[in-house]
Image (spheres, rainbow, N blue to C red):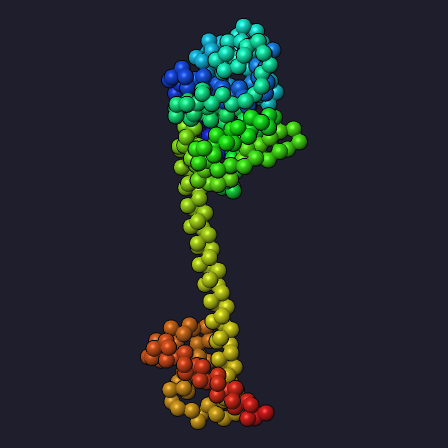
Length: 301
């Protein structure tokens, strides 16, 4: 069964490649988070077949470059570019000096259009993103080996109200989004509204299940209280009978005592209906029986 990350990438792969500027922006997001992006080599490695095919199409549209594609173990596909002229063309398109050292920082001018920003984030998720299944706790990650770049991407997300944090691991830096609404907004912006809707639906189902559990717990607690109360009331009636006080009580109290003994599991509402009195009236009569039993026990002692 495919992972939710794979399902999201399936949906993103169906997003049409229309504008050249968006093809550059999406490719740029892929390059910043891919396996290798240097003046000597560009290497993109993925186990998602749809993404590998889309990546090749994007590079052709954005840079007029066709990467060499090889398949490896575990269904992993590698896209490789080693031609210096092709790499130089890509560098220039991405705003880097083709002859200088590549410092992976964010060239924000490539993302000035809303459509290009969405395309860029789509590329980032393709290359470095993962997300847990909606049935579990919401969590989206974007992983890179470049800490400075992650800080810039994190700030970019914050600018667009996508709350996130950064954690540093042994060999990588992770931008993480835990807030459900921010994850939904990120997916919608990237072009995966169906996946975002799946998260929303699962969140609603969780809320419904939690509400049902709370109601069941409340009902169970009330049932426990009712059982304890019934036991105490029947014990009080037993003591009144043993001391001879029960027969001296007014008919209304004796009738309630009889009903409680004959119906130990009945609720107050059910007993009140049997006695043809209000629930409040029944409660006060039962409390009176308990008080009299306590007084009677004290006198006896």
